[in-house]
Length: 277
Image (cartoon, rainbow, N blue to C red; front, side, top):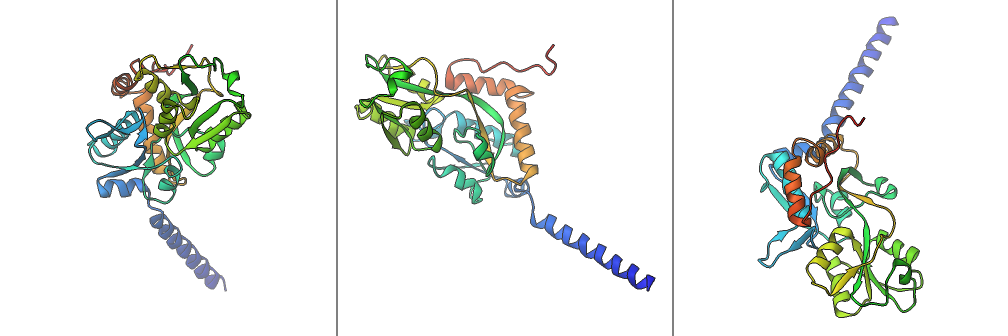
């Protein structure tokens, strides 16, 4: 009886080990897939200056596009071993959740409700939501937005919709699929104010002479934009998070600083010392 029980226990252990091995192999990290494929597929925007857009020569470029190339360089040793998958604001998260893209870099702010369905690395840039209006506009402060005569434009992301409701409930809010379309609406007079990520607003104002001004203050707090991916893949998350850390605060800070200055015309936040006394 004892020997039969021992054989049964041994068989159950062997079965459990076999099932564990099979589960482990079935759950191969996307990182392994990237290395075997020798190419990384990244979801980016093509309509959000200066983060991802088509330039005058028809080239997809921008700060986030170049950050994506840095990730490819770190993962595979070559910034050109990359496939850039352009998506809309609404399509960026489904692109990674469906597995079509390995991860995404597309002005994605870390919010608690997003963390329930997505995995985020540490931030690669701070951001805030600014409002731009035509120069000479009667809208002088953020408080002036809450007026029925204001046509308040932005992209149709959930965060932008919520801000419009919170800060300008009386305004006539209009939403667009892209920042480029929202900016065009402001330039054409279809809207009288435009809320957007600070990078997009500052780039827009800087390239439109004295036609527009940025209102003092921001809608909400300073946020963090991060790389996002399908949750549950620790090896890939750890690799991406480590690479971001080394660029924004470690051994590759010089490359990151040069890229940041190219796109924003100023130095990035300084490296944080490990030991702050």
